[in-house]
Length: 269
Image 1: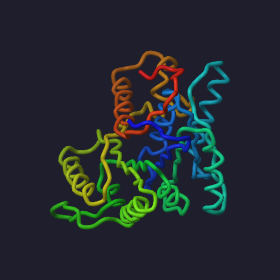
Image 2: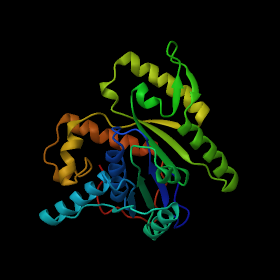
Image 3: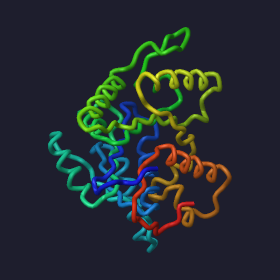
Image 4: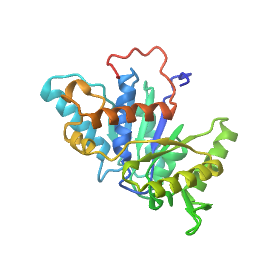
């Protein structure tokens, strides 16, 4: 990790135009993990209809009040504006005094999601290990499974990264996160891995292993707890401990900047 050089918060956008990839769950866990590290975290939910991330943090706040406990968390607001200018104004306001600004986008094509992606420092695209999800970033040959071309979304990010590098001398760090890999047939997983490796060199993204499909993630939502809140989850089974390790590994893979002078008030173990 590198250190944050100034008070401009590091923007992390979680974006995928396909739903059901564990995007909001991953975003919440990353936000809480950063809060555990002592960082000040704000978040914007760009889906005013489902507002999954916002509901997660609402549940977290209600659990704190009901149990009289103190949990690291993020300030989360729902964007309901009508223009990109409205979004930029909201992001600027929430970013004040923060170390990280996390943006969770809807699982559909959306002008605000595209704008958030192009303004991010770290762009995280969670995907399931399937060629249905792979199609968002690239198309493969039906016989050889070799990459034929970049998708519209990948081309958008590619062009944006080039523009950012020229104008600001700072590229977007694009990370494709492979979620729910445990339910993928081995040979198909190998084909996806090979195709991702090939496409990553052409589109300029990194690949990270994400979160496996586990019931625990759905069970935690009503309380707003995360796998990092070990002192409040009771005795964890082996699968839950493995899931915690997956989360720690993912956070390390994102290579986010460290917050200088931040002193963790909670243990992230």
